[in-house]
Image 1 (cartoon, rainbow, N blue to C red):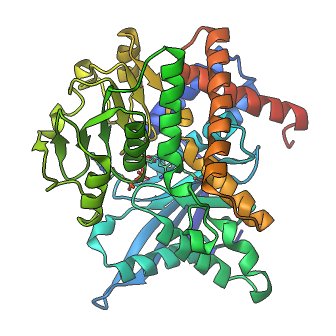
Image 2 (cartoon, helix red, strand yellow; image 1 turned 60 degrees about the vertical axis):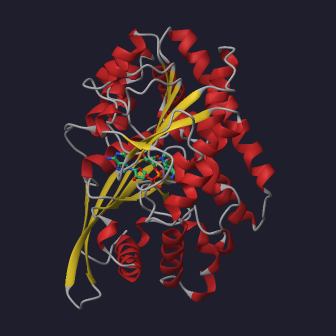
Length: 433
Ligand SMILES: NC(=O)C1=CN([C@@H]2O[C@H](COP(=O)(O)OP(=O)(O)OC[C@H]3O[C@@H](n4cnc5c(N)ncnc54)[C@H](O)[C@@H]3O)[C@@H](O)[C@H]2O)C=CC1
Ligand SMILES: O=C(O)CCC(=O)C(=O)O
């Protein structure tokens, strides 16, 4: 599609360091295991489209700044591209590629009719006022033009984006369509406010899914979660809701780390009180009473049973993984564990519930929001959570079966499910000559 402002659509590219290198190494390992068809491997190694937009916005003081926005569309063999938008200084083409590729595997693994996309703006949103963020978001949406759409590419929230930002995107997208079709395009994004076509329960879907996976791990290993201790990195959407649901199982949150502070209390931190504090404190946990403040580097070494990384990628590394004492790591974040760290942790018998399954409750929730919009329906919270749990149980089972079949770890098993599904699709319908 033609895009209004300074857009480049480029074909994909040479692997580089960081999350992008990790995702390709994970892919290649799994592709070797399942003996993926060579042609399909070539297709999946590449991204379909890489969209970079430079767009100007007038700030509150009257000056003009030009922002960089990205949207990478990895693969759409199973359906429209789907995945979040991140507002963070680390957003660049490689980060967007890695995150888009993970979305393709995630959707295939949990059986959604979606491909993978991801993007965002290279920005520290804390430096801008609310009205500046609104103008930045609306300009970004306008710049993306028809590269997004309810049946083309459907963004959703990710780091530093939320329901309000999704509503601005939906409103801007609809406003550039003909008045006769405006309202039927609200499902151009998911994660919207409930009053604007959002799904009851999408807010908690990812954290709910993380805990559903921990419960499946616990049932498999006959572990009683009551009284177990856990620590959470990142106390935003995923971190808070995962803490909320795991505390409901009787487990005890003893440490939290976010971008502002690392807090510890061996008697327990109340997720609800901490969330109420963060809500009043620009989303930050620092300053919360009833906790001691630790050095950031001491976080992963805290004695506990469960670790939930729910912040950025590449946090558990070869440098800090030796300190980890937990039994299980439930990856709420995308790509929190490097490949070398994973190898070391698995050799010590620590279980990792891989991101593409562990945090997939979010995109499953998004799927139900999209479906609800398409059908003009409204579902109740219990129904939504039940549907998410059901898809997760099935995907968890499929991951176990493939891990057993190939005698591989859970991440490779999860990839094997996704790659087999994609291979079957390409083989059934053929590759466009
Ligand atoms: N929101 C969603 O539905 C989904 C999110 N995810 C992934 O979960 C992770 C968290 O996303 P959200 O909770 O949505 O973002 P968020 O913006 O709501 O929260 C991010 C949290 O990470 C913290 N953080 C940022 N930099 C940090 C650092 N250097 N050290 C420690 N903490 C840091 C922030 O302070 C904040 O507490 C991301 O990796 C995202 O891709 C995955 C699936 C769905
Ligand atoms: O809800 C969605 O569409 C995508 C959420 C997301 O960005 C992710 O799963 O990493």
